[in-house]
Length: 423
Image (tube, rainbow, N blue to C red; front, top):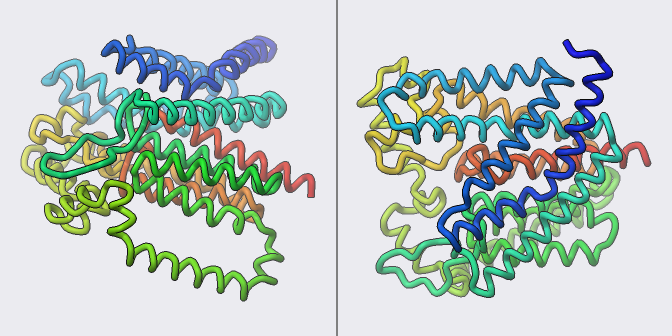
């Protein structure tokens, strides 16, 4: 046990380092992608940066909340028991892949643990960190989109053989389109929630910008998620008295939304053709049916992975998990891109427990603030991310989302508490 004075000194130094490093999170990822496109290698820049952040957060949490930190370490060990059984028969790359994914899955909880403690320990420093990170991250997304429009970076999707696609989407220098969509969802939620009470013009500007960015990515997560946030955030921020007094108007608004939705569905071909993705969706529908469009054939790949694991592994191995390499031995596409399913296949019951535990912790935080506007918005965000994670993946398996997600939760929860105090 370290003396209290020594712990305080170390804690201050770690806080200073993290407050200097965290705001550049998306900038480092963007720069990493630019190096990959220009030179074919990033020299592990993003991995080294994120490992540094996680190490500092773990050390800080170990000093302040050792039980929670040791609990996360235990979860990591339990996740790796199953894959470790097969490691002697696989190449080193699969060992690193299993370690990396397990750390990614636990990273949101570690970041939430550190940032929540920081907001309590030094509120002014935490508020400054949240403000700078949100500002820099927003600028990075905007500049990255402009670079994509100018012809730099990657297209969001690869063309399908025999399918005419006039527009393949824009993701700039970021590597993963789906992960970028989830990051856009989180940042949009924070900006919309903060801008609505302060300036309606700023809210309109944020809404238009977020919607344009979502349209440029061409993902269901981005387009539908951002649209829902734009429509629902102003309503969720209203006090309870508003809901009681405006029942008739709210019912009328719901009717209008349903009619507009029906109109969009009726003109879906025209709209999707304008976006340049109608031919692609028609092709997918012919190949995989409606589930192919809604789940992007993830159910098909999950079925193949499940069948392969049934045929080649015993029940106790599947309970412990067989790792990414264990699945890849028999199935070419070893990721189903459904977070709960992938964690179950790779890490067994420990993996799916981490999935449930992570969302339970995030929901608990937002549920505690449900009586306040920003708490209800936060609850909506976490519900959307759970839906995306369960049906489209790239939430707990994301290397980009864990920090913005945790930061947005602490920011809006802290904002809700401040609003309550002010009232």
